[in-house]
Image (cartoon, rainbow, N blue to C red):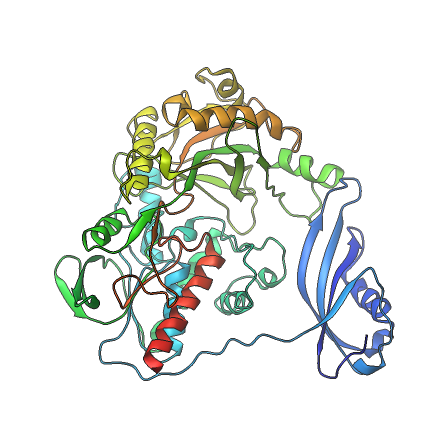
Length: 534
């Protein structure tokens, strides 16, 4: 294999033991490439992962990009390592002239923020509207709900600057293989994210750091000529001859536009209804519901890392687990929050919704994850496109009542849940959900097929993670907002059946997480820019 000059060499699967210093990577790179260490100009980490399959011999696995002085002199490679050339990906944004009626971006989650940022870089000076408050005010309003149970239906854990992800772990790992991901990570780092998100296999930012990052991206959009308005809700569309002609904000203000990027998130139920009334094409889609399960973080660490459970190189342990069972629907973990907290994430009065979050240090006493079961349109009460929303509401209302009708969440110990009896006393593991929990039975809060699947899966998961079915582990219900219950139609140019309306991100049914939502925002923004270039 010959190497060409000025090419980056990527080497994958370089192994270090936990007691080895990362500086040893230089020597290992040299051996793999068959050159002296002085021939290496530089290298950068592309990925760092933990291989804990052998708990008595945990190793760190690296991928690196290398520059060498004389690529043509490299004659041999260690066959155990995957070595290849890679071209650096440069994300280029085309420049266009701003139209008289600027584009409007609805929502400031990762999809809306990155769409607006790209449009602003292109010179389109977008107007960005967000129904909730700015991130500083939002944090105070959310804390007021968590302490005093006073729900603000416009600003909460679902709505406000940064979207639902602002009160999560800031998880950035994704299965989407798209070179634009590097641009997203780079911009997040420029906005204040930790540099290690660029190479950690399971990168996260943390709720505490995300608040500064979304504020910094907002300020960049404004500096580029964009405008950001908070406490501003899209309440109607103006449509002429099958095309967008304007919007109505907060029920009264009219603004003309020919372009709307609709990035509302998965909980804007009133917006879904308005879109349906305006004959925007949509259909119900599958999603998943379930509970949050909490264990002691140290127990998960021991189960995953054995004797190395407190090694600082490993951090707080994560897991991803799934059980496929004959005769029942599969159960899988979702949005795992190491050293995290279970949060009250409702956005409508008289309902209880759970979610999980971690701060950057992931140093809370408990670790939690959603345990979810898929639900299908056939499970919904009707064939209406918004029947999935009603399905969610049904169980969220039941959870509210089971919790005491005061925004407490219903909770049950795993041991009691498996024995089908109500819990009356907390054990070693203290629930972290705020505003608070009420011990009860979860049987009234979830469909029978979900309860049956969970009862069969949890004991089986014990075989993969020791202690997972600990009788004192806490189940808190209900988790219903894992993804959107609706998918809005869009064509190959990302437009809906109404021209000029661009459904985007998780709320439109095209993404599932921070990175995939941001990527969808980029793709839609590129389509908008191309329209203005015609």
